[in-house]
Image (cartoon, rainbow, N blue to C red):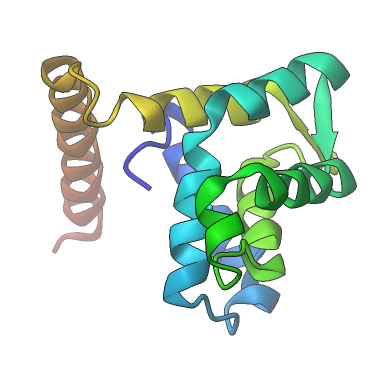
Length: 150
């Protein structure tokens, strides 16, 4: 979650509690987790798809994942490395902020580009953004506590 834009962070968190309640019982195995990390690392393929169609609906997103399984060297070498339907559903539901049933460019590309910056030499900028976001959250919590008299 640390790579999600701070400006929309509360929206993402509230979606987990409201929109994803039916998916909370889903489990993700370690190989599924690893496969999903490889999938998310392929930002350019996802961006190309979004730019080509202007958005991704869930079927297109699932097709993109299946295509990834067939092309990724790790997934081809180890058939247990697969992105699960639970992961697809959760990822799609969290990022579809307008509930359109589509992931538009601004909903997916920015998030994935931020994720790609992690550990890519822009650490100072990223640390500054993370610290700023953290400080804002702490400030909001403290303001809320003060209003409640805690």
